[in-house]
Length: 185
Image (cartoon, rainbow, N blue to C red; front, side, top):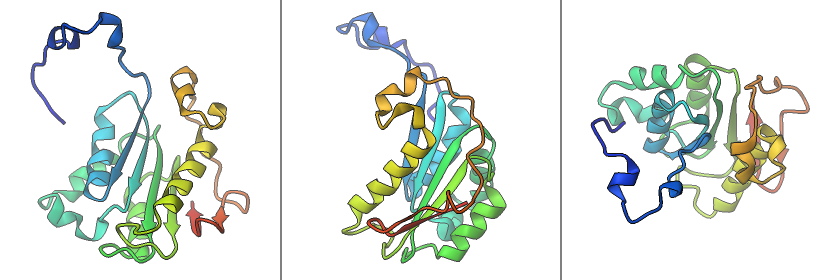
């Protein structure tokens, strides 16, 4: 995270009206590949963060990407038990195999409020599967933030109690034939 002394936004942008600067009250962080590792770690430092989406986290090579400090990043990502988390991996990912992905999630990520999705037939880059990836994300968002009724602009008005997501059952093991994704507990 950036650290330092920064002027208030009103001073940095005097041409804008003061009421243009409304601090967000609820933030969803989304990261892809290396960015998914950073997103998870950064979520510990952002109290307004209510959920993270990690697309194609490169768990198998994270040690090199994070300068041999991957445990530090993972432990920071696990600090916030109140966050909703979605991890998405293609079963043909070029860097992380499905069993290793599941192993890391089971060992290092709190299961409370966490879901994993495996997108069948997708590689690390989700080539030609972008719409399926978006469908998986949309389905998860709608299942977690039901009160929004599909309109995420309603998030700032929600009163989240951060109750645990329903446990894995036949109802929650979603299989989408159009997206060919399996949600795992």
